[in-house]
Amino acid sequence: MFILRSLLTVLQTEFKDKGRRGVLFAYTLLSIILPFTACRASSLLRSLLTLFKVSITQRRFYIFMASPKLSWESLWQALWQLIPSPLTDGRILLAADDSINPKTGKKIYGCHTFFDHAAKTNQSPYVWSQNIVKVGLLKIVHGRWACLPLSWRFYRLQKEVKEGFKTKLEQVVEMTVVLSGVFKGPLLLVVDNWFGNAKLLGPLRKRLGEQIHLLSRLRSNAQLYDELKPPRYKKRGRPRKYGKKRGTAKSLASKLKSKTQKYSVFLYGKQRQVQAIDKVLIPKALNVPVRIVWVFYGRQWLALFTTDLTLTVEQIINYYGARWKIESGFKELKQDIGSRQTQARTPSAVTNHLHFCMMAISFSWIYCLRLSQPPQKRYFLKGREHFSFSDVRYAIASAVAQKEFSLVFNKKQKQPKNNLMAAFLQLAA
Image (cartoon, rainbow, N blue to C red; front, side, top):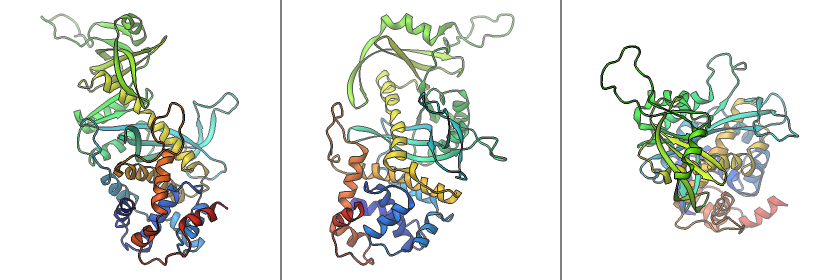
C-alpha cells in the first residue's frame, strides 16, 4: 500500500495545482489498472464513482480525458525516474516494434487502412486501425522478463500527412535519442529483422555515436564478408571495399551446422540447451563488423547479429528471446488493459487515452519491481513457472482494497461507509 502511495504521489506533484486534477489523474490510472472494468471512458467514470467515490460529473470527466493541457512529457519523465536499477548487465536494453490497433468507426484520429502481415486467411489483410510504434525497456522482474513502455508514436501514412512525415525508423530514432539522455549507460536496441538495417543503425550512430548498439535477426539472403585487411603493398585500380566473400547466411548455416556447441541459456522463462555457433563477419547491408550467432533447433535455424562484439553467445540469444515481451506488451495494451475497446475519436482524447494505457502498464511493472516478493500466481498452467501481468494487476487491486489506502492517499476525500471489496461486487453486478 505504501509503495503504491509513494509512486502515485510522485506523479501527482507534476500537476501545478497538486490537488483535484492530480488526485483525479491518480484514480483514473488506478481504474485502468484494476482488472474489474473495461478501459472505455464510460467504464472508467463508473469505476471512479463506484469504487473511489470521487465526486465528479460526467461532463467534467470527459473534459479531463480529452484535455490538451495534460503535461505528458513531464509525467513520463517522472515515471522514468521511478524505475529502480534500469541497467541489465551494465547496459540499457531497449526494444522497438510497431503494431496495429483495429478500430470500428470513421473519423477516429490516427486511423488509416494499414496492411496486417499477421492477418488470417479468412480476414482482409488491410485493416482500418491505428499503427503504434513503441519503444520499451526490457527488464527482468522477479525472475521473468518484462517490457516497460517508455515512449510511443502514431505512424501515419505519407499521403495523409501533408507536412512533417516521419517513417517508423525515424520515429524510433527520435524516441531512442530522447531516452539516451535519461538513462545513462551504453544502449542496446533489440529489434526484429524489419527494423534491423542500416537505415536505423546509421542515424542512431550519427546521433549517439558508439554508445548505441543493435541486436536483431539476420536475413537468410544477407551477403557476408570477412573484415577487410590492409594490403601489404599498393595495387593498381580502386581499393577493395569488402574482405573475402563468405556467402549468405543460409549457405554458411549448412556449412557450420556440424561445428556447433551446446549452450545453456535462459530462454522463454526456462533454462534451455541450444546448439549454436558464432562468427565475426561484415554484412554487406550494414558494412560494420557484427557478431553473428547461428542457432539450430531441429531442422530449422536462425541467425542473430549484434554490433556489440563484447556480448557472449548466451547473452545474444537471451536478449533476443526477451524481445518477444514487447509483443506481449502489445497484447497487454490492446486486450488486457483494453485499449482496443476505447471509443475516443478526437486527437486529444485518443492520445490521452493511449498515454494512460501505456503508463498504466509501466506503472504496474514498476510497482512489481519494488515488491520484496513476486506476486502470487492465481492460476497454475502447465509449462508456465512465473507470474503473469494479470497477477500484477490483482496485486495492485489487493493493495487498493485495504481500508487504509484511501485514508493515507487522499485525506481530504470523504471516505465511503462500505468496504471497497463490496464496491467491486457492486461494479461487477
